[in-house]
Image 1 (cartoon, one colour):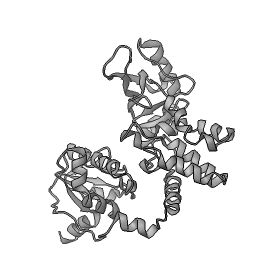
Image 2 (cartoon, rainbow, N blue to C red):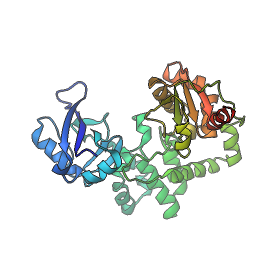
Image 3 (cartoon, helix red, strand yellow):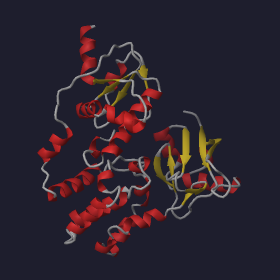
Image 4 (tube, one colour):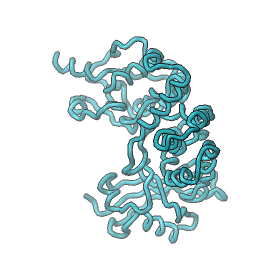
Length: 338
């Protein structure tokens, strides 16, 4: 592996710039021990660059990464081509420094029902807040951190204020039901189960059963793939499922795309339909814009969702979606025939 690292660094100064830009650098892996060391070097050598030295985090290739993370650890996981960005491009002030006032505002939703222990726990979720996937869909989202704090209050501390906490996070604009959790933390954990447990608790209080939920999401569960031939430029999508490298290897004309393992909004239904369609559109357009004419979908449920709502998804992103949607079993059938 190369001993050097190629870096695209986000550069923006709100007092001077109208739009952000990126500067490129090549560094030697041995020159810096940690990400914090590297950022300190940029602050010292670049005129209009800054970062938070107390809460040192940055997005590296889309993953929220702590400053103490070693360069070697990052290289072993992400390779030697990095894009370094602020926790929120939308809230960028100067370099990687952001206006993070929204973090404290999020806690105010549940503050009347929380104690100092809860606030202390919430403060540990700073990185988790800015790793929230739904911020890519709306800047008004309340953030994953307050939801995880609410889960702790309800399920771990058994708070008598359960109903009030649930109401606060569920009724907030772009609250609980705007969350489809994805782990965007470097070396983070999948907290999907906690989010879905909160949603189930709210729905049960509203009288909705699990069976009602399934009926709402899918009425026809039969898999019907679109017309597909192996010669078509084809991308492989494994959101909600395990990656299947052996299937990927059978694709004659493969197309890679960034969203191949991301979720596509399915878990946002039925409460946040427009966000679900917008998120699905990001997945499909990423495949299309990288040249795919067909998308092999590993998850049956994801395929059904994309097929059922394809017209609504196209309206949401204001684009045609000329891509065949194919279940992974269809590819296996073609292999057998050939």
